[in-house]
Image (cartoon, rainbow, N blue to C red; front, side, top):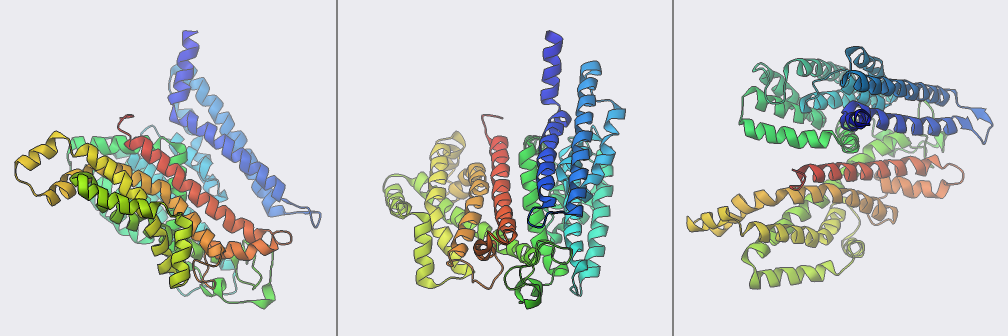
Length: 498
């Protein structure tokens, strides 16, 4: 019985086995969805390319299940995963080209024992770049492409090779606390790649430079432990992957996507179903739905980010002053914010937009004003607790000014809950953006934005449902991704779990 319980414990804490179960579940779900979509019930014919996708996902699911059995056998036999079992991860890496990021991620994690945070960053930077390359490559079937298309695609291939080489080098030379000095140059190159929006490369470059310079070991260890906790949360990792992929795609889209396909009417291609030329079909004006969703991600991310960061800064400052000074200052600030908090956020946003007009700037302002009280309350509670700590009393005794105490000592130690709250609430900002645009009170109707696209598609749910389904899925996935990543970040930064 003790042996059986030890094996169960090993299965529970072995990341490869946990990832295998997660991959099996999601690959199976996608296999069923692809099978259902592979048959066109209205015309009574099969969609061959979708059927091929189903076969790939089904075979991948079976393959991963077999690897999980081998992992279970190895743990029961020698209490570790044997090398020949790890070799089975190499074929799974290729599933990224079939869009199965779950199986590909599992394959990359299986092939090596040295799974530092840097290795994970390198793997997901590579996967992000491959996904962006494949999505951009779909434009080759259109009648024409933008002038920068060829150069951009060549740059994507070059970056993918850099990330692949980096992953191999990191797995071989980087440990949990150190890295060779020559990796500083590689870290600088990766930081320069940030212009593509691939934030995995940014994190990788930053950590490599810190380790190569032999920075403070305790700080490196703390950073490593925090990221290890986040990266062991599979849902948080895939949430982060989708967010960064959409962010990077929205940045590089102008290099490979032609904006005219998203905005210019094409009356010869009205309400066409998905095809190679139009991967997600066209709307009632013949506009490419795929291009509209890609460019719409820019608006959703911009509004979601700024309508979160603005109230976080303003509300954080008000909450810091309120919590530090207390008494009369606290009463004045918090009672005014209570009045604002009593007004429903969506109603306040509608009122502001109705008064000043529907455009992107007014939408950001409308969503920001209603969110200020919640951030102020969060910061106030943290400041009131930290203001009683000994290091704050020591700063007062040394004659440090109140402003320096608040912004140099108290606020930096209160940022963790604010960051977690921002990641958890940015998804709500994305939903509010799409909701107001759906009602005609958000972004201008002619601009491709997910809420605008969903509004057009809602009138064709019975005849051409894909016009509404695809933007709806994108909104759902982005919001879920922010929530999953926020949950992982909260668990990693929770002092109780530390």
